[in-house]
Image 1: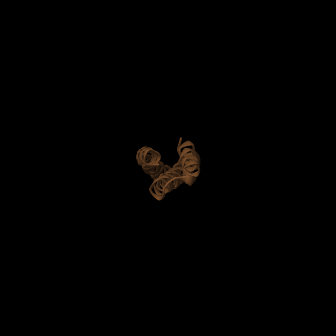
Image 2: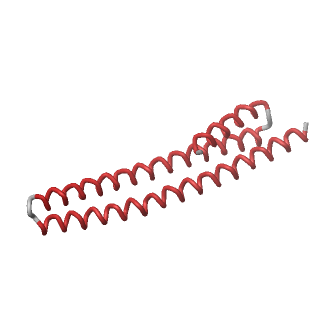
Image 3: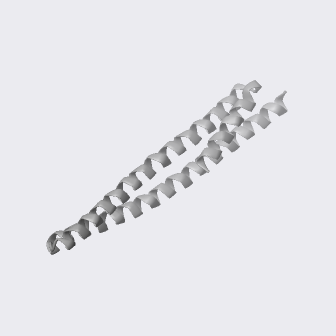
Length: 124
C-alpha cells in the first residue's frame, strides 16, 4: 500500500510538471510525505522483526536449558522470550499506526496537490 501511494504521488508530480509552482510544490510535498511514510514504516517493521528474532532465540535457549536440566535457566530464558514477544507485539501495533498515519498524511498531501492543480487549471 505504501509503495502504491509513493508511485501515485510520483506520477502526480511528473504530471504536474507543466503546471504552476504551487501545484508542483504540492505534488512534490505529496511525494516527499509518501517516501517519509514508507521509510518510517520500514524502520518500525525492522525493529519488530529484531524483537521477534530475539524472542525466538530466547525461546530456543529455554528449550535447550530445559533439556539440559537447567530449570532456573530455562525459566529465565522463557521470561526473556515472553518480554521480547510482548515488545514485538507492541511494536507491531506501532508499525500499523505508523503506516496508517503515513497513509493519511500522504492522502492529505495528494488531495492538496490535486486542489492546487485544479486551481492552476482554472486560472489558465
